[in-house]
Length: 218
Image (cartoon, rainbow, N blue to C red; front, side, top):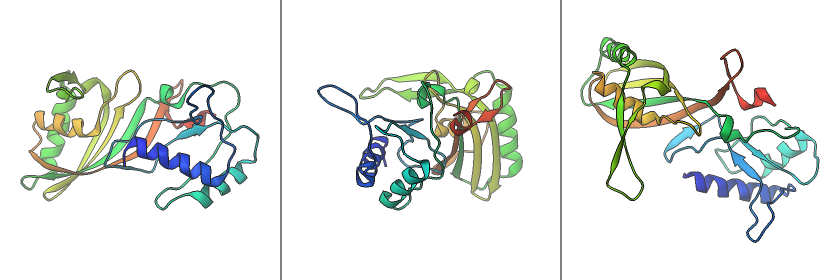
């Protein structure tokens, strides 16, 4: 589903839950709810974050129970925390995203071929991919190498599972499929199909440079 569909789903969930959701003021009021990062169409995930503002205080257990009753299949609220005081938006603090990508190759691949491509990838200063502009045939070259921090692959015959940790956020964002195509430029065998992309989590960095979730901050 698209990010817009996801937002509409959450609006319906909150409406059905009868929680006192706050709305912006003005001619066209919007619900005060925000997501940490948009999930691309076709991408599954079990590590998404959102915040919402209510017009009155409620016990967290009651909020979760109300949402659980209104939730459609495949959606689950795993944890809720109260955010006190004025804090930055979720989207503005996100820095890292972890993905698991299943790739199908033209021919059978070996673990040695995959490991060699990863070494070559990290040995390079530039890994260029091309992004097409919306509603335009023009494409823009982008160096994704500085935004890729971890790579690991497991060969499974004509398939492989790729684990990555990449930069995300307002300043720079690396798309998971771009890493797969970037690896091909570093010598990885040709990919026939990106079978599945799953987002494992979204993170920011603490003062020690360690990965933490938004729930670790509040």
